[in-house]
Image 1 (tube, rainbow, N blue to C red):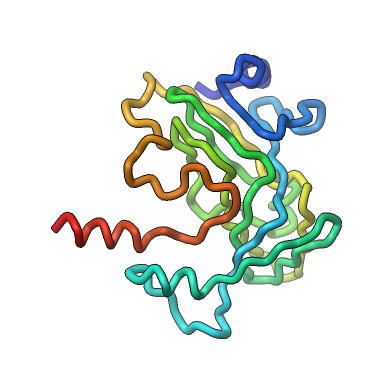
Image 2: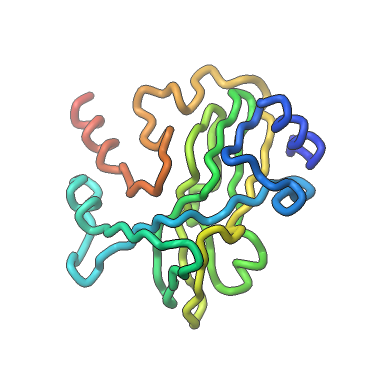
Length: 196
């Protein structure tokens, strides 16, 4: 069941859902979601320096990305075909019986910007900022400004509290992140080799 605006407000007031800094509900609360704002840190692939990424080698992923810090009121320009990782200003903490679903905002999508490729579900027990996979699918460059409302989170109840919340998983890769993190896919490969 998707939480309504009333249920979201009640969950925020009781501390069941934690968003920090606290959202301005007059601006950020929708009928079934809360808008999150774009942070100042972006990660981009340096495709001119590296010809490919090898997910079996963590160095390949980390070395191929560069971090860019954008000051407030300065735009991050997404060129057509660009891909970047970015994070939200707000961090989110979910209880063990709610999942979060990150969706793009229609006003941003109408400019050709997608805010996530496939990673839309934040498991019960999530804690940290959301890393978004930004892409410009349009034919014109688009300026994105830190602090703009970039995505929306809706919340759904699960049938019962999960037995293993995300933040307690031994091999979780992204819990507690406070800025965008590159793919940790190589960790899965490293663990698979250890287990064999």
